[in-house]
Amino acid sequence: MKTNLTLLTWAAPLMLLSALNSRLSTVLGGPVVTSAAVGARHILFSEFDGSLWVMGDNTFGQLGLGQGTAQTNTPVQVISSGVARVAAGPVHSLFRVGHDVWAMGANDHGQLGDGTTNNHFFPEKTFSGNVLISATVLAAGDAHSLFGTFSGAVTTNIGLRVMGNNLAGQLGDGTYTDHFFPEQVETITGISSVAAGSYHSLYVKSDGSLWGMGDNAFGELGLGSLSHTNMQVQLVSSGVLAVAAGSAHSLYIKSDGSLWSMGYNFYGQLGNNTTIDQHTPIQVAFNGVTAVAAGTDHSLYIKSDGSLWGMGANGSGQLGDGTRSDRHLAIQIVASNVVAVAAGGDHSLYIKSDGSLWGMGANISGELGGTSPSYLTPVQIVGGTPPPPLLTAIILSQTNLNLSASGGIFGEVIYTLMGTNLTVPPSQWLPVATNVLNTYGDFAITVTNSVVPNASQRFFILQAQ
Image 1: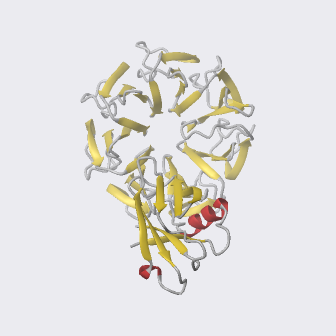
Image 2 (image 1 turned 180 degrees about the vertical axis):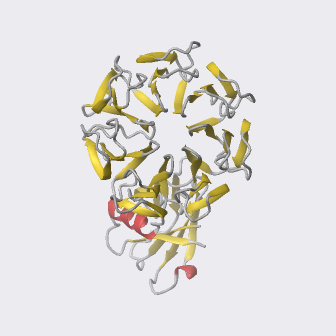
Image 3 (image 1 turned 180 degrees about the horizontal axis):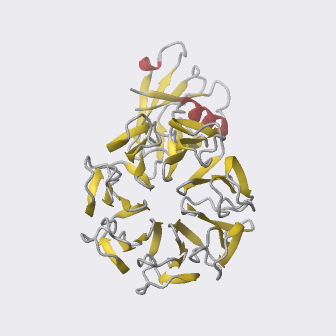
């Protein structure tokens, strides 16, 4: 079925791009999930319009719905606009609005960063200004939180801020003291990814070096020994792109697309076909890995072809392969079109290229929707619609109309139809151009010989297949 995106006419001057893009978003404004996070028994996700949605357990206020709601098995909107990224610990939640950090849920160690140890049952702003926009610089562990910040108009002076439980030194400030406000523990020239496990923390600098702090009882810092540290220690000197932390295991992706893992491996979550803990990093995939996530005792990753893979604990079906069998080697869960992934206690989420949200695993508190106690194969939580591409230029060149846009979905087909009478259904308009969005979601269309001086007014509709 084709969806009309917007209408162009030059009976009067062409519409402004801002107004045109506004109409594009309105007409094609289906639910499109842009980020998702998984706690112990709750989930939260943001949509293309900036709204925040939650589902599952709310015992500690982690859904932000107040004390009157114990749990919900249907998505509930908490914030209507402005939300860009989300993160979840077992029983607390973080999200970014603009450059501010908001939080809700358990706060027994100060992990919400508001200066208290009081749980919060409604969303609360806990840090104002200069929080990084990147998708991977907001993280929540068992009872601590991390995020990256910048100084000034240009992100050249970036800090790492931490708050919450510091029992094992996971805040990296040289102490074992909990912090109830966000504390800056390092000022560096760039940060690209952060992750928080139960009692350890990891982050990647812009030079590709990987750093860690906190507990190392199972080798989750990859230092070779089992000594913990309350100061930041360099774990890998270069080439690291992204990092993920489970309860006591860690994974990272290098610039060549390889995947490495270390730490606790009782359930095979390291993916090396053993259940032996690894005290130094081991390579478990050799190329093509683009994203990684770690649950309590399971691991998930996406490859460049859009396929989703998983390994480790599967007692609740969190790997989505139709069984409850643990996997010591990675298995393919979804063949294509996966663009983002998140892992929690015993359940997992992923987002497909059409913006739909899917989940599998435990559903004890309704965190995946419905009433089944678990889902052994993926179930759709939110349906998707490709986000509208944003027009970047409308140019009249002699008798030609040139349109260009960006931000759509790779492979989406865009048609341009022309008509001279608005009362005629678009199905009867003349197709004058067709374009398929490229790898970056961009397109450029030239409608030749469409602009005729002194001719009757003409109308153009952009239409998505």
